[in-house]
Length: 308
Ligand code: DON
Image 1: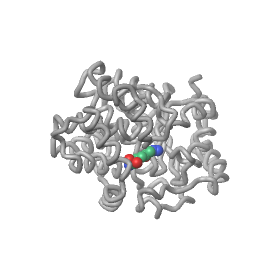
Image 2: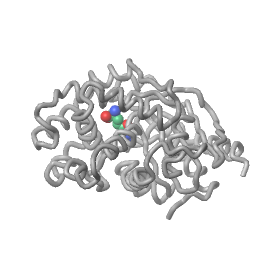
Image 3: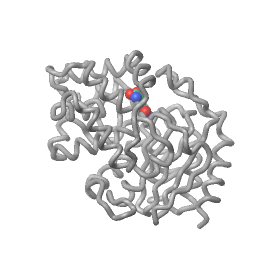
Image 4: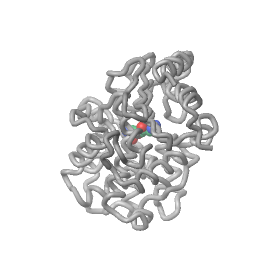
């Protein structure tokens, strides 16, 4: 398989959908992104990296960091204990739904990839790391991706922190439901979550993360960057919850675990050993990159990745 040519075909097909995507504007800084900017990266099974389009462009990781936050939670607490705070059920409601939290059993967020679930995950890490929680998450992100230059965007962080009304509402509901400990400072907690969402990556960084998840935690040199069982749990939740209330359609059309972010990135996972990341900031109604999803249709088909 000529991966470079395959990526180009995915790009050429994806860009025919550019008009359909809408850039996120509930975080004002994200509204400045150019929805015609498209990129993709594949790490081949031997570790070689192929890219197409805007491969150097750095965008905010947004909800893709929920994979890393939940991994850190798995690394510090037993899975059974975590279930008392965050479930693993798919959601038919949007990622920031207040109604979903209100309807959930015992006020427990249904999964770690909706905002409420990631905020609770952050609070569990905050218990252990306090004011160093963000530094720990950033360091873990750098280690997983294998890039110690990874940093966060101050402007996106400030923009989200001054506009995140639904996340504040969710956090107060979680305090009310006793899912988050009452002694936590809400601003400190949310600042960790917002900074984490503002971490800047490019498509090759996403493809490296995908590579690790797809190979039970091992990098191309055979080094274990995360536990194999944790990688398996993350792939499973990506398959069932990674593209939110679009996860069913995504499973039918693409057929691989994936996690999207409103910054426009999508990271995937498979058992075939490739790493794949795509980017375009125009989103569908569920918060998933429109062009990115279409590119993944081609990539998954041509690399025969569909797991169903
Ligand atoms: O909390 C938020 O709303 C954003 N920082 C992240 C949401 C997000 O990326 C949803 N993904 N598609």
